[in-house]
Length: 392
Image (cartoon, rainbow, N blue to C red; front, top):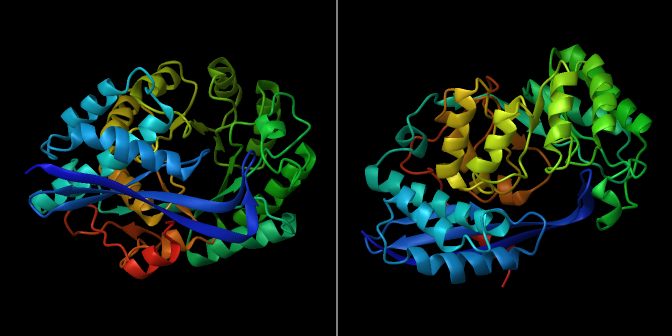
């Protein structure tokens, strides 16, 4: 079996009412869906992250740079193909857009291998559990969403059966060193630290009534002393973890923060590759390790990151914030590891998650999600959704 073609398509959803995290203002959300074809008639589907830049750039790297490297190769030699892509691009890669594009191809290769072996991907990887406990990930800043609306939103998730919910913090223009001042729409949906605290408190008050937990995500915008101050305030409210509080380059600050808090520091989804995660793990700069299969180097690299975390007695819980392909790929990865935590399920309005697959991953009545038992990732794209949102 040989690879005959590698292609990528862009799907785009336009929001009527934009959503924002601590740095980014999303009026549109893109997904780059990767397809790898073989001469055996087996095709694999993957996704390449395109956060922070034009989706067209990622599509170009997948098709014009990485595709030619793997075409003609045996798609079941996934480790070799990963290393070949990594080595060929080392002079301008080793992270960033190259790793995102590699991730999309890598996920598609695992889908091919699963179909070839007639086995779900998570079982190919070792198979630790057939079901996962998910958490509702939303609570973004939006015009008109104050603490009352935020509390009502998280309550709706608990009523649906979720036991955990994550909300955004950190969109605070008064914090020194925050990258917000350099971002687009940086004057929209801004709050003071005190107002953010009140938003979190409104949500933890709701969670307490349901016996549930709240997590907060600062998306790399705090400085060290602000992270310690807010972290201590949040942990007093019963917040379950503080996610991505500091800039990626501030590893020393993350170490100081992790030592100062009694609740876990989670991160860093924005990081890529085993060797970069190694620094956070070795130096105990995080308590929860959060790679992403479509961003951090694919399933192949995320398994290595998870195993390295396991060797340091740390749980691994992937970041998941894109289409249904991303959700399924990360679910298979998480279900395969023994140091698994809970699965992130984005709850923002997003048809590229809810309508993209003929059989989407959904919350069961018992509060779990169950892994598909079909070969590979077990997914089939809904062509009507593809045509509705496809760019070009």
